[in-house]
Length: 70
Picture 1 (tube, one colour):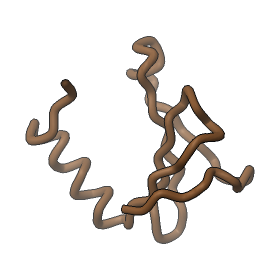
Picture 2 (tube, helix red, strand yellow; picture 1 turned 60 degrees about the vertical axis):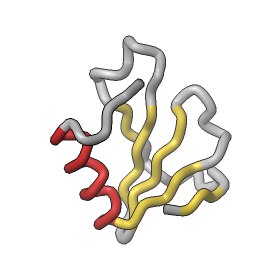
Picture 3 (cartoon, rainbow, N blue to C red; picture 1 turned 45 degrees about the horizontal axis):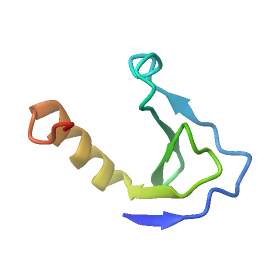
């Protein structure tokens, strides 16, 4: 995972409809070889970049309950 500036306006960002009412949202953009994640409340802020394998691993851990929100 790497952090990079949020500079490319051509990325297509998606926000979960579940998180929309909570106010604590992230947005995700899928690229050919990576997945980008940003804070929807700070769209010009930093972006986390995951490889596809890292992203799948994180989603698997979240769905299994291994990673929980505090």
